[in-house]
Length: 249
Image 1 (cartoon, rainbow, N blue to C red):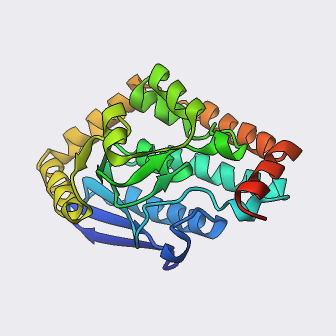
Image 2 (cartoon, rainbow, N blue to C red; image 1 turned 90 degrees about the vertical axis):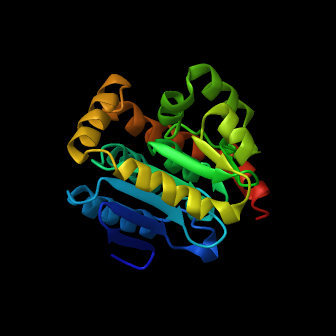
């Protein structure tokens, strides 16, 4: 595993840290590859019943590395396909997963938080799905958001675009817990992880698997179709022009 992702084990809790702080932990092909490797290792650890996901630096994850996909449909599809597969694998992890959203969680980054079983953040964090503002379709994350907050709320969030505060993300259900300040976040996340780790490992795994079946999380086709749809929209002249304008290129 490269240093783009740090994976630490302190059974029964594991911590996975996205470690590209100079780019606000934006999702590049290399970072996604490292995340896949880390998730693969996590899946084999029967001694860990809880997995905490965090971002190094000031951001949790700023979403897709948009500069990497300008004018390159093949790279865009490869990145989006990798992100779609990662969300599927994360949802299927035997561990109960917690996103510790220390800072910005945008687009695909907010999607990673959404796919976790729990997400905790602070009041001033910025979260959201601004894809439509950038001329992009948030089709990869949409199925997970619908499962998290319901179809009506997801419709309002995704069509409105923009970002929201940690407090607003808690109010609409994207995150399950919010604390007042960033300084309180680490302690609160650790306390939640410890509380979950008190559960019986077999019971946690069985319950999570059942919940995944009940809410349709095993429907991989819709997530993978989302990657194709997002790549198709992203490759259009309109989308490329909007992206270049928003990125100041």
